[in-house]
Image (tube, rainbow, N blue to C red; front, top):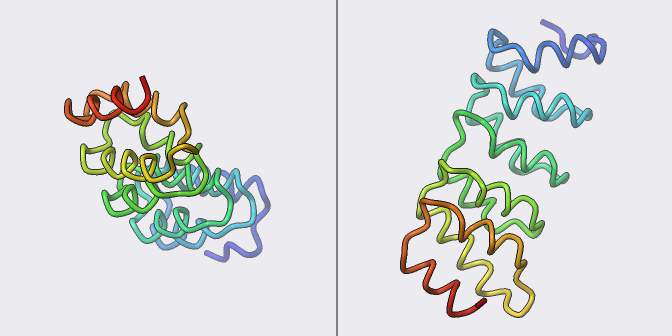
Length: 144
């Protein structure tokens, strides 16, 4: 299929269709249209290679979209846990499926940024049920 000749409407439909060829989804992960990339991010059949492309995109919104993929790996989440844009870290902290290791990576990043840590990211992180109790104690000690 030649993606380069498709209309925007066709690209959006292709990116959101779970029957789309995985290699086409990888190609769509680098599309200029952020809506296309967002659909690639939430498509449950997007391969890890496509999610890595989203995770390394210059636009923070696309990096957030990478966190929504069903195939997102812990390595991708750990890398994004150190993202300079707080909204990306918040997206990971909000996910109930984020592992304790990923959440601890976010906490470490925020601790290193004191006094410039993002209080909203810390608040969302604290509310995640997967955050270990000792990490909640650290947050209480530093930001109470």
